[in-house]
Amino acid sequence: MTTVDPRGTAPRGSTRTPGVLASPIWGVVPFALYVLLFLGLPTALALGTGFVDSEGAFTLDNIAALADPFVVSGVMTSIVLSAVTAVVGAVLGALVCYALIGTRPEGPLRSGIDAVSGVLAQFGGVMLAFAFVATIGIQGFITVLLRDRLGIDIFADGVWLYEAPGLVLPYIYFQVPLMIIIFMPALEALKPQWAEASATLGGTTATFWWRIGLPVLAPSFLGSLLLLFANAFSSYATAAALTSQGQSIVPLQIRAALTSETLLGRENLAGALALAMIVVMAVVMALYALLQRRASRWQR
Image (cartoon, rainbow, N blue to C red; front, side, top):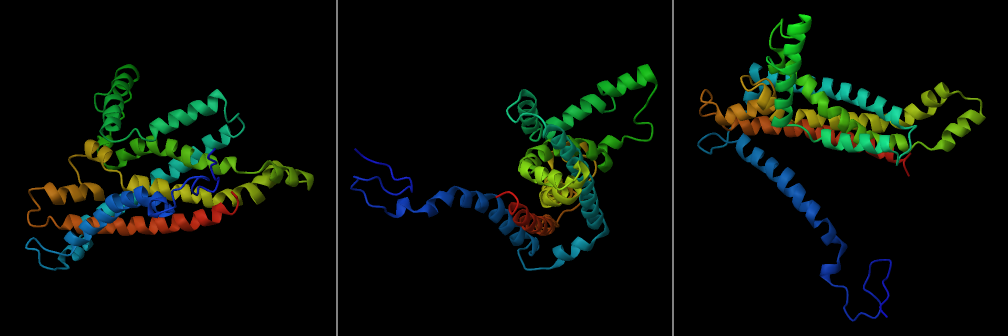
């Protein structure tokens, strides 16, 4: 009878010897291919186009164009938009997680919110833009209802939904569910023994959260905040569908550099813009890795 070795080596009684196909390195091949296709290849394309002109000659003009006031304005708008939606999404998501921590993990409420959060966190792009246009657009259902029944015109000061400030609401729509998904495990990792020890020493609930809970959760919260920032900073489809007449954020400026008829001969500016985004994302990823290293000490 063949016995399976729990260490994952060759079964006893088997005549096959471990070869190169049994090497653990093959287990990371799918992830390595994923990183190569969706991170390495775009970075190589950005480098390959950001430092050459339309004739293929090396130039720094594209990098110098990043100092153009129009480009700087787009970068700042992207950063502010991402920061605002990340902070709002992180705070609201953390409050929902705190409200759920007292419920049973396998209960219908927790399971239902987990399922809904998983769906809504992926509900972005053109579908989300259409949903907002149909509900609070110029002729949206809620807009018409408020205007005709209550005399409230939400667009009295302009069609803000189709400008950069109008992206805050759609972005928060998928930022909050994403925060629930990624922050809930950290909140669940708080050990009941810590609260018991605090109570034994005379601490109150406020003392526990101020001296134990919040310091332990701080790295996880900040790491989740960075993920939300990166999620908003790289979003494209929702902004493209809602603000198609403007190029107020970096992803839309990249599209304009590739397709606009007013920027002929500057297609490679898209590569320089992509490089700027990669630099911002690299900084965010480095900070996230640092925070995760600190958070992992309390989750062992």
